[in-house]
Image 1 (cartoon, rainbow, N blue to C red):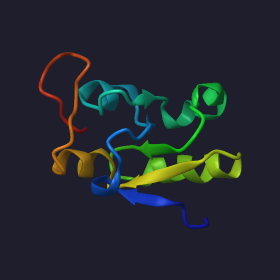
Image 2: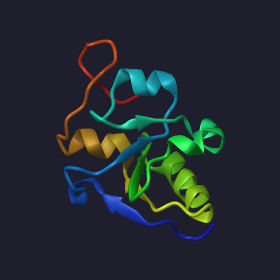
Image 3: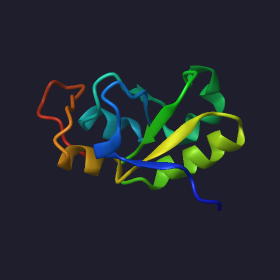
Image 4: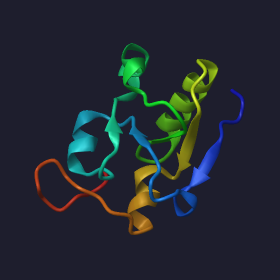
Length: 107
Protein backbone atom coordinates (compact mmCIF):
# COMPACT_ATOMS: atom_id res chain seq x y z
CA UNK A 1 0.00 0.00 0.00
CA UNK A 2 1.42 3.39 -0.90
CA UNK A 3 1.87 6.02 1.76
CA UNK A 4 -1.19 8.15 2.42
CA UNK A 5 -1.13 11.92 3.01
CA UNK A 6 -1.17 12.52 6.75
CA UNK A 7 -1.48 15.49 9.11
CA UNK A 8 -0.96 15.76 12.87
CA UNK A 9 -3.88 16.94 15.02
CA UNK A 10 -1.80 19.94 16.10
CA UNK A 11 -1.49 21.01 12.45
CA UNK A 12 -5.21 20.73 11.60
CA UNK A 13 -6.87 24.05 10.81
CA UNK A 14 -9.77 24.95 13.12
CA UNK A 15 -12.16 24.90 10.16
CA UNK A 16 -11.01 21.50 8.85
CA UNK A 17 -13.70 19.28 7.34
CA UNK A 18 -13.61 16.00 9.28
CA UNK A 19 -14.90 12.60 8.19
CA UNK A 20 -15.06 10.13 11.09
CA UNK A 21 -14.97 6.51 9.85
CA UNK A 22 -15.36 4.76 13.24
CA UNK A 23 -18.27 2.48 14.11
CA UNK A 24 -21.54 3.79 15.55
CA UNK A 25 -20.74 2.96 19.19
CA UNK A 26 -17.38 4.74 18.96
CA UNK A 27 -19.02 7.79 17.36
CA UNK A 28 -21.72 7.92 20.04
CA UNK A 29 -19.13 7.78 22.85
CA UNK A 30 -17.34 10.89 21.58
CA UNK A 31 -16.50 12.73 18.38
CA UNK A 32 -15.37 16.08 17.06
CA UNK A 33 -18.16 18.67 16.84
CA UNK A 34 -19.31 19.14 13.25
CA UNK A 35 -17.63 15.97 11.96
CA UNK A 36 -19.39 13.84 9.34
CA UNK A 37 -19.85 10.20 10.37
CA UNK A 38 -19.63 7.42 7.79
CA UNK A 39 -18.36 4.07 9.15
CA UNK A 40 -15.47 2.68 7.09
CA UNK A 41 -17.51 -0.20 5.65
CA UNK A 42 -20.16 2.21 4.37
CA UNK A 43 -17.82 4.70 2.65
CA UNK A 44 -18.09 3.12 -0.84
CA UNK A 45 -21.91 3.17 -0.76
CA UNK A 46 -22.13 6.68 0.71
CA UNK A 47 -19.63 8.52 -1.51
CA UNK A 48 -22.21 11.17 -2.40
CA UNK A 49 -22.05 12.34 1.23
CA UNK A 50 -18.28 13.00 1.16
CA UNK A 51 -17.90 16.79 0.84
CA UNK A 52 -16.00 18.51 -1.95
CA UNK A 53 -12.63 20.06 -1.15
CA UNK A 54 -10.03 18.82 1.31
CA UNK A 55 -11.41 16.35 3.84
CA UNK A 56 -9.50 15.15 6.91
CA UNK A 57 -10.34 11.52 7.75
CA UNK A 58 -10.19 10.33 11.36
CA UNK A 59 -10.76 7.08 13.30
CA UNK A 60 -9.62 5.92 16.74
CA UNK A 61 -5.88 5.68 16.10
CA UNK A 62 -5.27 6.23 12.37
CA UNK A 63 -5.48 2.73 10.88
CA UNK A 64 -9.00 2.67 9.49
CA UNK A 65 -8.79 6.30 8.40
CA UNK A 66 -5.58 5.46 6.55
CA UNK A 67 -7.44 2.72 4.66
CA UNK A 68 -10.25 5.17 3.86
CA UNK A 69 -7.78 7.81 2.65
CA UNK A 70 -6.00 5.32 0.38
CA UNK A 71 -9.32 4.20 -1.14
CA UNK A 72 -10.78 7.70 -1.47
CA UNK A 73 -7.54 9.02 -3.01
CA UNK A 74 -7.66 6.27 -5.64
CA UNK A 75 -11.21 7.41 -6.40
CA UNK A 76 -10.28 11.05 -6.93
CA UNK A 77 -10.99 12.61 -3.51
CA UNK A 78 -8.78 15.22 -1.80
CA UNK A 79 -8.34 13.52 1.57
CA UNK A 80 -5.77 13.52 4.37
CA UNK A 81 -5.36 11.01 7.22
CA UNK A 82 -5.34 12.43 10.77
CA UNK A 83 -2.33 10.83 12.50
CA UNK A 84 -3.16 9.25 15.85
CA UNK A 85 -6.90 9.62 15.28
CA UNK A 86 -9.34 10.53 18.03
CA UNK A 87 -6.84 9.38 20.65
CA UNK A 88 -4.48 12.15 19.52
CA UNK A 89 -7.45 14.54 19.22
CA UNK A 90 -8.39 13.91 22.87
CA UNK A 91 -4.76 14.18 24.04
CA UNK A 92 -4.42 17.51 22.21
CA UNK A 93 -7.41 18.86 24.15
CA UNK A 94 -9.53 19.41 21.05
CA UNK A 95 -13.29 19.74 21.66
CA UNK A 96 -15.45 16.62 21.71
CA UNK A 97 -19.15 15.86 22.09
CA UNK A 98 -21.04 12.66 22.91
CA UNK A 99 -24.41 11.74 21.43
CA UNK A 100 -25.74 10.88 24.90
CA UNK A 101 -24.79 14.20 26.43
CA UNK A 102 -22.41 12.35 28.80
CA UNK A 103 -18.72 13.16 29.13
CA UNK A 104 -17.22 12.34 25.70
CA UNK A 105 -14.59 9.65 25.51
CA UNK A 106 -12.64 7.71 22.86
CA UNK A 107 -13.45 4.02 22.47
